[in-house]
Length: 205
Image (cartoon, rainbow, N blue to C red):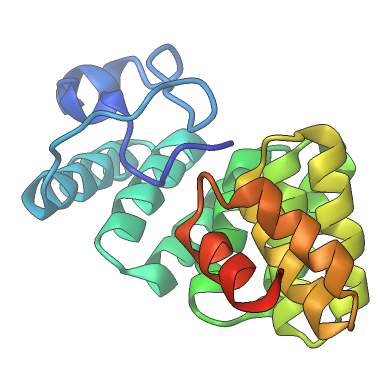
């Protein structure tokens, strides 16, 4: 599964050097682990740094993506979406930007447009379990439980260890009066998810 949305190691690079070598110092969300111990001040400095990069090169899609990720950590979701839009404008094939734009839309409750973004990612990357999971979550919040279950099924076909998919599929199966299936899902998730353990104890014998 993807790491939580935190700014990448590029935050620690000299932004002046980045501006001179924007194409060679790309750090994408998929490829690097997340640094620990960053603060709001770090993200604010990152926003300023990438803004300086963009002042010199306003078509730098990677800088838009990284600035957007910093804004996500600052809970500036609408501004982050604007940056992801710019990144996609200059690099339409950047599924990292499309995926994270969808995540921002989910946080804002814009599930219909989040679903559209996740579908784009899935079309380009049909084995992306996280995109299926996020699309399922969007469908669940759009009162489409059967569609959500279908996507959670695909998530678990791709990655049988995806604990949250078991939990949410269990919730939906329970809503669909499939208690046996719900209990089986919560059983698989219970060791790693307290919510699943509670549901298992409450609803299953």
